[in-house]
Amino acid sequence: MARAREVELDCDAPFAVTAARVVEVRSAEVLENAEGVLDLDDVERVHDMRVATRRLRAALEIFAAAFPRKRHRKALKKVKALADALGARRDLDVEIELLESLTADGCNALFGHGTNNALHPGEEAALAALIDELRTAQRRANDDLAPFVAAKRLKKLRRKLKKLAEAAR
Image (tube, rainbow, N blue to C red):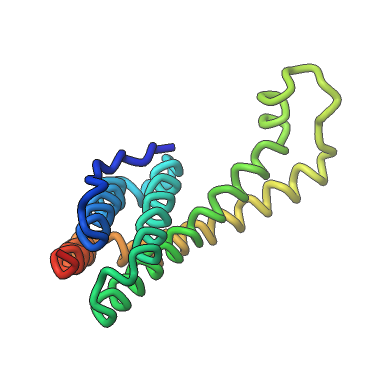
């Protein structure tokens, strides 16, 4: 998981200046994590961007009083929508990972060969079918996420968050 960037703050700075700085740093984290987020073979990218989005959302909520109300509300709405799309995809990633750990290959990897953790043939087939269904849902969630992480939309979000931070100063 990507670590949160440290935010250098001046304890003597006004609240609004601090708010702007935190939002700038957390915004940059979100945007940095956007690269490759639609890659279904590297699910950690979605996780990292989702965590960064949650950090940004928390900062926006904590520092709400520092920003113009209407501009803040619109920015927070965009960040929440992105977080929801990332969350829908991430939930499926986690479910698939868990179920794959229950397959014979997953059990062997977890517990070593020769254990008594093998599934019965019918169970293995049912599990495989469930994983296939989840993979289909994962692809759909990825398709739903794609517009949120499109370059044009991220550029608009960057601009909106930059203007929000500038308005606080």
